[in-house]
Length: 214
Image 1 (cartoon, rainbow, N blue to C red):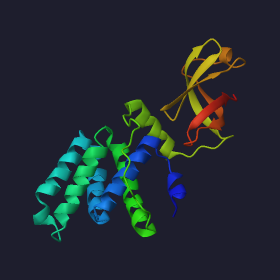
Image 2 (image 1 turned 135 degrees about the vertical axis):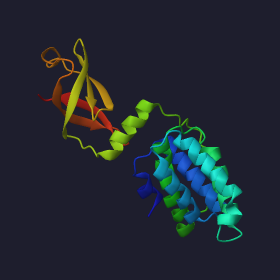
Image 3 (image 1 turned 180 degrees about the vertical axis):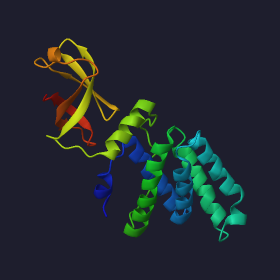
């Protein structure tokens, strides 16, 4: 598997930078990817609980504190310490547990990639792109990740606003697009469900442009 193949998955640029940085850090520290898997499993089990991200960071601290008791070797505590430090450094601005889980899932894959492919790591660049995501952005990411869109595809959309000849559509309850509909605007009403055709997609596979067809 190549970096290009890995990059084809749906992560934002900021999330992708973070995933690479954490994976490179852990590989340089010779961290066991299976120990990271335990942390990922904990987050997956608690992702829908209140304060899931805070719980996750506290769990990592607990692993470091109890590493000698629960570890299988003398290196286990070092593994936990490396994981806790890398996550605290690179994930501190990620406020959504679902997004964090997506990133860490890719960290596990990337760690195996860097180890198996023997890719020179060199100096690890600090991610510079802000990774804060609003609740709205998180919902859109979830909607995009659960369905693959194609140009020419027909999907249902709800009309949420009409201003002049501009119509705002809501797709999958999360994706909002405002389009010029000079021939349709006066025939539509807010709250109405219509069919729209996807005319263009963004680089990440999300919808860029649609038009009403009924």
